[in-house]
Length: 376
Image (tube, rainbow, N blue to C red; front, side):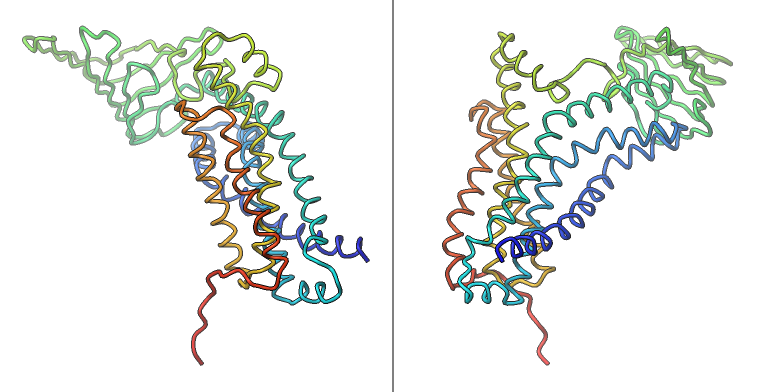
């Protein structure tokens, strides 16, 4: 009987979990990352590289979506059990709410173990692979630094505006403000241009056609305009900023052993604090599965919300958790709180779950908003 009950509750959790995980992951991917993918694909980057970028970024997204999906799944499962009076029937048969806990706790432990593996190993490896792939793409396709009808400052002391890019490496209606020589900045207008690069040597040439170079002396006493048919500008690939600029490992790309070694080796107190924060977060984010899975049981068992409202309520609980996590991270980063403070949201949510469990095991219902039904 006991195993049959737990298997039944697990089934009620697993199906919503899979659905919620897929939807939430797709929603996060549909944001900035897909805009980047669209940007790269429009400039001729291969489908293999674009797909690899998505794979590299997936562990980072899953570290956040797995705890959220688990919270929604457990909440929806217990809402259904409560709304169908199955929990009442179990209580009448002598089965308390505590006796149903092994199923959600087992689901939380599996989610925790999987998320921990992602956080400790897959996420830093994926972040490093993502960074390296973007750098390699930038070496081969420097024109990715430009975007149509937008000012780009990703080439260091150059601000570039391109009205149209008819083909990869081809530019039309180009404006450039060049501050590489602070004593003699100049502006360049050209009808067209092209990017010529040698990735192996790290050299890049921006060749402009049919334009004008405008120069003004620092005292504004002399101004000159030089017409040209062809004008070459040498660019330094190493000045590319953003995600392309380096192979160097940042804190987010370090493995667990590297983090611990760096903490022991560094003499900079601020950097040690930042490394310790990252180390604590690698464990705290997966542990959210346990805290959120625990608090979802009493919230779902003793509320009378329809499934749609239950999902909205679950998202609200996770939003509250995420706000607490962000506040703790910001305070720790500012030095107001110690590095371990990233655990405070887990402690708060877990404590709330433990407080609500005896309450939910009783007969009273939690007072939560209900959907108003129109009068007949």
